[in-house]
Length: 359
Image (tube, rainbow, N blue to C red; front, top):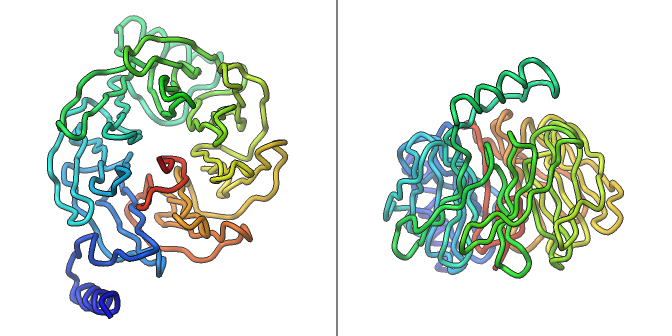
């Protein structure tokens, strides 16, 4: 009776055009949260797979986002504001804004800490052709102007402040943690490498060049058994497989412009969002043989499984929608209109996805 009443109240509020607190629609299946670069945070009720409300984080252009394991906090990186908004997840109210730096983008939440990449020297757009005059000119410009490398701000969510920074490469993108929890891996798209750092000290431990496989390493993800890692090479149509010592042991061809990447919960299948290929590409995670391409929208950057592992939701920026896929049958289920350049997506309860992992 309580859930029915809550849903009735929700529908009535939506009919009147009222923005509803995120908690009102919450029940057993959980909620998904979609960051929109041209808007706010869209809240999706995973019982109905419908958008039910929005959360206004202010400052503009939210991208990376994450949820704490207890579900109390939702954290969002805001590009225009150069900060991290810490919100009460159930009410949608901003508790605190933490200054980060220019172009905050990727967010990973681990325990009571948020790891936020920011890029003072980001240029964006398609990369110049390898070996071209444009590529040479860009590198020379960066050297002459002594441009700053990207950093990962480590935010203590209890204190609500940055406690240290880890220096990455030029235009740091994806973030992943080692199996032992002591190291952080970051993809540095303009430097064409993956770098490994000590989390506590920030010390650079290893650099893995990806230049020979193409341009712009983007997504990075640890296998559930902790024995390997994968990283997508956006303008190479490849993904590289690293062993537990961070050595490249395999290179796998993908569809066009691979971006976000994630294993399923058991580590049986690997999923890759093809931004230009307009598909979610599925591989056997043991052999890396392709299984299927599931059609989605245009320029899908990130995706997540629902907490019950029955569906996958892909945020597709250029088609301005969220695509729902049956995770067992690997077939499209429905499309949720969004219209505000969706970038990232996570759930609570926390689930498997290109931006998150249940802790």
